[in-house]
Image 1 (cartoon, helix red, strand yellow):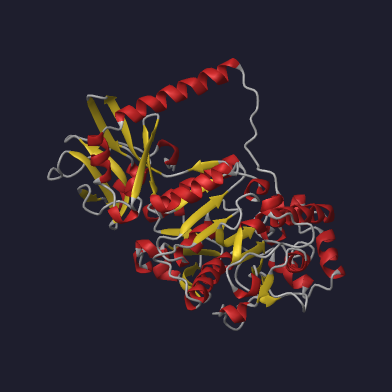
Image 2: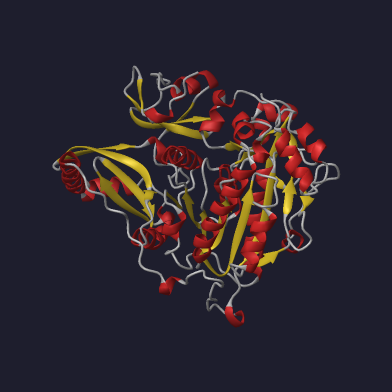
Length: 512
């Protein structure tokens, strides 16, 4: 790996950054390895040999464990079952922050059962902070995970589908689209695109690309994002701002921007009850006395670089009425309606659109009452699912997500994943065959008794994850079967006796 840029160290010294040389030395040490379990899938770390042998709890995350060395995670079926997530220890603070915010809201009288919380992770890929917050939010909370870059958005969607939380929608839009989704979210997290100084220990590109001009460009972009998404936060709602960088321009100065220009009130981590830091492994505070924040730095904490601050949007006179956002931040009522950009298409594009319309019409016809009843029988009715057909695919969206999803669409937000794929329709209207989708098996929405289950050993589980043909024991009934590893579902097969047809998603196939 190339050396840490001298200009980067010089820049830290110019802002009186404490221990600049110690930080630079820490960035040349091996990165930390840690995992965070899926709270909803009840993984015990004794089920993971690498953790059981070398694991150490992370004080600021109840579900996090630090590993002494990095195993080959791809060869652990529990990772593909969504039983845990590999994440930097510093970023796991998001779980505790979300938990403390929910506790505060509950003390203030919020009834989550009858009034589900709504949360937006605006810069969500690859999904670490989204899944950390899901661990902390009351079950049934509505979650939107946004990623603007399409390739990263696909990774985000895969990770969330494996995590299995049913009340989540993915989107892929720039911040100006969300500016029109006014007062919609109780919690908005912005882990902003940044200069990546905190990633220099494990990402050579972060070292190559660094420059002071990049930090200025990132700070400007971050303010643009914050100015837009501020409108998404409900009066009395919460904004979490973070970066994986060290300079004050992207951190403390932007925290002041949130306070002074957007009108949000800073919230001290100590007031929220955030803690669990041990002597010799604790984050620093802000580099500015007037800014409340935590700074995770590799020479002080066993994790990568992270700056995180929490804010709250004030209410008018302490009630639920909204407050205007100051200093040129245009209130929603004054903003023009933002609609999706419609670009001219070639005739081939028009033909494709017409064909998709015909396919959707045909799918709607295939989703007969019997097919609908069969699929609904696989799903926990407490999720209150609504089914929709597009092409041959049937998706399930909880009713509680419908209004928020439609509201985003009306604002021009690109909804990339509205609902979980649960089945594929085959045949004709008078003879419709319904094939369950493996992604349903990974979801908390699937009824435990929907299909027979068969436990796989590790080698057979890995063969399944490679999409190889496997053979089940002779006592397993023919038809669709959920395959599990250590009792956690991996997906589906169709057992036909002498072999089982592998229904694992082709895009997820492991190649080692």
